[in-house]
Image 1 (cartoon, rainbow, N blue to C red):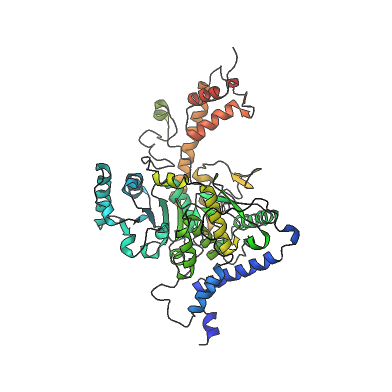
Image 2 (spheres, one colour):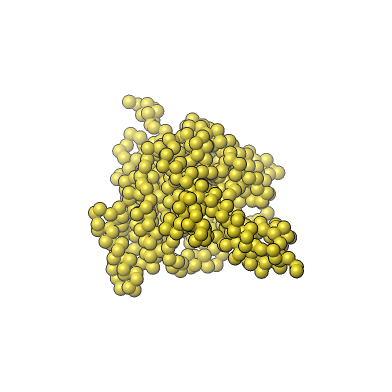
Length: 554
């Protein structure tokens, strides 16, 4: 078989085909940048400031790095040392029913923060068959002199690891020839036994079973060739050229998903937006103030799902330059790196799901309500929440990072360097509510938002019969039944709250008056009840305290 014939037989999911597609995108990006009219160049007035002494990655540098690797490792040669050949995952993984949970840590100060919620997950989350704790410190850290509480949790963790019947095992990074590196949680040496890999940070937040398993995992099954998560960050474009392309390409992405193409195979996805830093002077801002449903570009690690095939790519020798830069940068931007890399490998934006799902649990019900509730919503059932309960974790490490001088500037430098290395950025995430009445226009920031912020499961399209994405995999009848049950509970609780509010607001409260000249006082009370689980009495007192005009004059 000749060289040309060998190359023609390479699967499109094979690493060589994937690398060639990235190189092609970089070349296309360079052509697009060169063709930008002079009057659209250097339009960004805000300068991109150097925040560290680390040089930026070379613009479009991923292309020569991949070309170099392809040249040094021709198809006719043996495999690259001991490193395996990487393949992209399939677009759908409908038959997957189990998953692996990965949590990375390095200090006994965080043990209680993740082990308490982890115990609940192991006991009650369907499909959780493996837990991998990536320990980025010496094994002795778990047995050295520590306080009694930490020692108790350390012994419990080691006991779980030693128990062959327990789903948890500890991966000691340093014993596997790795250094203390945030990217270790994505190392193929972990060898997860399941295709679906779920991630949480060791200090959380830890989202509920309803959000992660019913919402997130089901979305991942229908989109297993992209990163899926609930914590998206937005990258703000500054030039009119990039803003226009973002608007056009995001709408194309929405249209594709709304058409509900089976697995999106064969669909031509919208092009990425060229950054053109060297030619046009364009750069971007990192928006760390919101978690938008639409137009998100980076997923924070906690609550993400990945196909295990991506681990091979993240640590591939061809991306050594990128990984070395990440480790050297003061912010260690593994989140930006993984989201950007996977989007370029797959040629698609990540997908997002609502990280908080309304279940009716945890809302305030009176004893009488509980006794009279025909659905049996009583105290012994109100034990599941959007956020699994865990002690307040030690935040010293994060405070140290966030309190570094010019932290925001360093993160902005990082995202510009990483995006510049690939030359372009994907169109942005499409929110869970696309095509539904819950998709609302937004006048500030990203173009669309999803309301409510915390939907019930029956509002999530891929969990609803004939909803967008639902037919791409068979609907799980147990999840459908559970979503209907929780929706009914939510309705009962809201009706109870409505009646309670009517009774408790009293004649002195002016519901139709304006709260701070913006919304009605009643609407503000409703917001506090729904958002913060206040009782109507507590909420109305708070509203009157904030704005005395919400109290009627006698």
